Length: 243
Image (cartoon, rainbow, N blue to C red):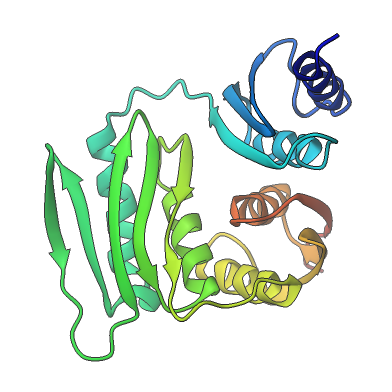
């Protein structure tokens, strides 16, 4: 058996070990080029996407994993509507009020806002087949992660390619993850951020605390999965109605 075939078999075995990936119903295409591995295809959820990439990234012989997995979508929403929804979230969010924003519209970059004074960055946004790509630069890792989550919240979004640079560069770590997720939860009007505790170890996030509904519990977990660089999420939130 050739080394390439060995790697492919190891990848398939790793994907089959987690029920959230479900390769039988959602086949994953595997491409091996040298020590680089590319995963592509459709997956049922953001958790499936993150877990699939995490499951194969540490395999022997794999130095780089390229994630081209997309969420399935039954929504009949065009790229223009996805773009407008993502841009609306970015322009309204208080953390990006002084950020320049441009969006690709009919092949041309349309200026939506020019920052004045002490800018927090410049973001160029484009959408193709439901995949939102963010280019440009921001002032912190938290801004990069929040921008990515705001894009994920856009109805019809199937993936976010977050290529924003952080200027000046920052070292990523678990404390940065906790800070960014705290900001995301505080931004999300559908979760009680003050009631949720966050822990992160080696980019594996654990949520704990008490929420009032199952919907709040699921929403908080989704927010964590959407965060750039996350490997896994453990949801230990309890659902308890207020007394």
